Image (cartoon, rainbow, N blue to C red; front, side, top):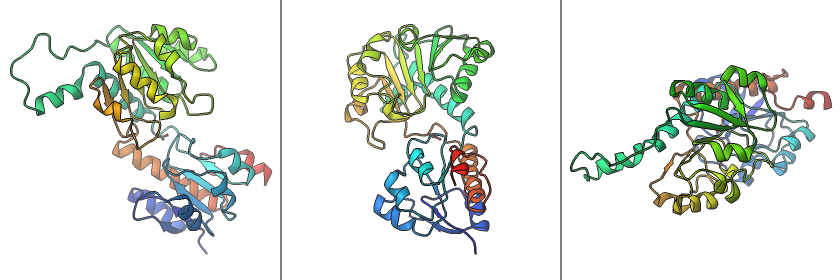
Length: 325
Ligand code: GLV
């Protein structure tokens, strides 16, 4: 008998095919997120689940799913899953690292350029029929060339952001918990403590994982330390930034602009942000290229199939679970 697997949302067909050939699949074709009760009900008797970052897989869901062997997330981030609880229950957790690195870095750059050069604001202006004459001093933005790029988190994505900065002749500065001297040499990057980085950066890109330590990593104190001309980009997770404090800083122009792909209470966006011109908003699409989303989904399907077939999944994040069994 094929192992039973729940797929909580629609996936690209190649990923569905991987799961369908090896598993008995219960697929949420409505493609609307399950409420917690529904999710627990659907998980009854399932050996595996493939889920998205919109699914909250907390201790209760895991406790009430005694047959579950694996939670396979179609994401690199794992903040929607209580990994410790999964480990306690002997459940494997997998993610999709690596495949989205370049795509996410490209989107960080899309936001950098869009905010610095006011692309979205200019587009709105033209569409509204407001463009009457060429303007020498209209829509003045900021150059990236030769400026200081601060990166919070020089991991895979942070490094890919830094590599792209070479073409813009930028000074690369970074902060994270531990210095990485090999990376510093490779990327010509300089380590700084967080507050110094905030003070020195013209552009600040957040690429940290969301953990209890990084929740509200950028709040009023940090925003105050930034330059009035600085631009903040968040392609990590919304709760890393205290959104109300950011709204205040953008309104008061204590920083110049922000490019946000993620929000504290997705898909809700603070209403005040919607009214500002100096912010570019995107619906969590940094990894959303056709190639990358398909690869992420296939990878998640492969992780799930491996685990429910008794193999070690390639992207297991809690290997302790194998020895605890
Ligand atoms: C997307 O945000 C991811 O974590 O993969």
